Length: 315
Length: 293
Image (cartoon, rainbow over all chains, first blue to last red; front, side, top):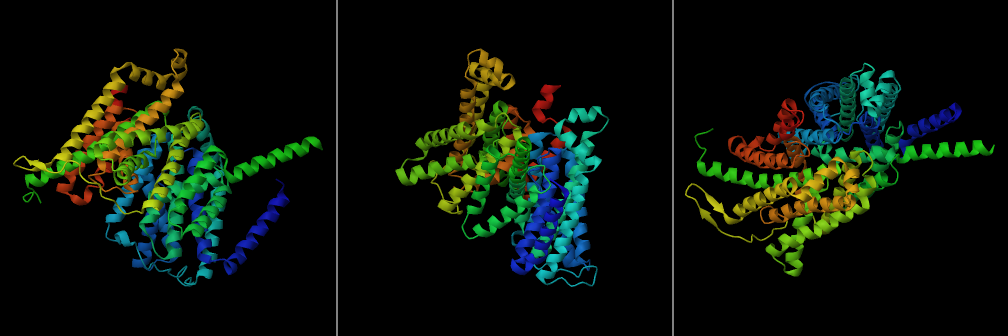
């Protein structure tokens, strides 16, 4: 794609993002952005490093509680609480990653799932989380100590800024030399090792980055809804982020953005129809796995290249 | 803490733990068999366990077919369903990364569980105990049905292990796992063997579901709550080691039961703690670590 097209698209998206909260429900838009970050963090692992973490909700949900607890009990401003949630998530990721990163492929998936259930039970039984009722009434303490953000439209712009910054940061990580090593580990771990890198350490660093990013997303969601629930840490959410990423396109920059948007929108539409939200997710995942393994953005890109090649031939 | 710990309570919880352990053992064995031949971690195992219990419940309530015939019919029905899934879905993914099998069976579990929940609601439905009563051993009371579950699951696990380790059929299975092309040159239909093996593993899950129906209530979520614990059991027992999976199942069930007596809050965590310790000590699992040495 040429530069001007990207620029034009960028300007259009930016303009849409700025006027969106005046036409659409800001809370839904903010939810989508939280899940965009969450899905990006997941994509960093599965799409770029080849690690399937089947328990990513432990970072998301765990940090939602941690951020909420900080905001409820201290005078910490909202942005610092979210950062603290991300940092705590990174520490949890370091612990879990260092225990499980040696196992590969499918075992890694099962182990991370089991770990997330472990975290779930701890959250269920801890006094500070409010158990089955969840943590209610999380305040949005003023940003930097003086900017009030109780209004949802105001808060939308804060979440938007945060999301843009995080996606840019994520872009930098993927397109850095470190990102190249990640992809190399995904494609051929032995070769990377023979070149003098330490694949396990590289994977662990990716895992910690991903965990803190997922934690950031969780903290953001807790402040958007002003409550945290056990659902955020459940295996259903771990599965949801997988569906989002695969639907959008594994290992693509914009894939998780589309995936998160589509799934959150679907959840909203199907909220009143019993289990249909989950059933639809299952069906979408099956269809993607069998027919469109490159996902939405991946297939579009393939189509684009196909058309470009065809037109190049005829011209 | 220990003075009010009566033998009654201790053995009661130990028995309950062994019951849970029986289910862990049968489910993790089925998972290990499927994984051993197909390299698929069958996430739908919990949903198939739940389907077993549901088919038994439907047979009883709509056709008047009782527990004992259901113990045979329900696993067969679910196994046929499983073989259909293998033919239509898993076969298309078998040459890809093993993660695709895990994700596809996860998606399947979502759909199955969601459909059942839509149809029958999420509350549990009771299933009548076919073996009421029990015997008093002096130090504790043992319900007949629980005794039956533990004994029957032991027979199933040992029988399965004998078939796979000591018969010609089992030898084919193990060989097809190692070198499918060579086994095919001996005139063995490997794709059919894979279908039947998946059916067998799924049938084993459904059989556990029928066994569980009179003890726990029949509910759509009965499988998904269990399957993650079973994953941890499989990780501890060693992937692909069916004996390891079964032994770890009984042991961890018993340990979970004992934890309920000593420290009730920890009982839902203890298996995961064991997994952490196992990961730390033995990167390959209990049994397979021994074999690889």
